[in-house]
Picture 1: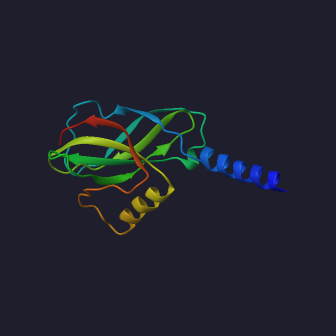
Picture 2: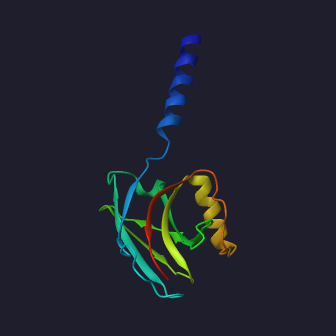
Picture 3: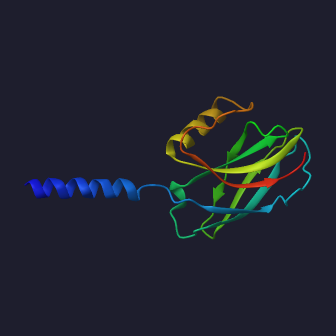
Length: 142
């Protein structure tokens, strides 16, 4: 009985470890590095990611913008991860934006970001929730 309990605990621990998110490698096709984007006009972002052989419904990637002070983040929205290894998203730059940031979020951070959008929390956020990881950045101008 003790051995069975021990093996069950190890099995549960392994299942929790294997549930951890896979870190994506994400790259931008659009916009281009240093590209000037119009202020207050929606812009379609796209790119590639690896590994492709993942369950994309369990991975959350969000786009954020940073202004010239580089001290906070402006939420834009989630990206759509397509099964062919490409992704698609939209941003609407304000004035003085200098960086586009892709952030991978765990389930809790994803819920927080979704809440920000629902509550129209579009101002600069100086801190991101736990469970986030910057996976790609690109310099832009607006």
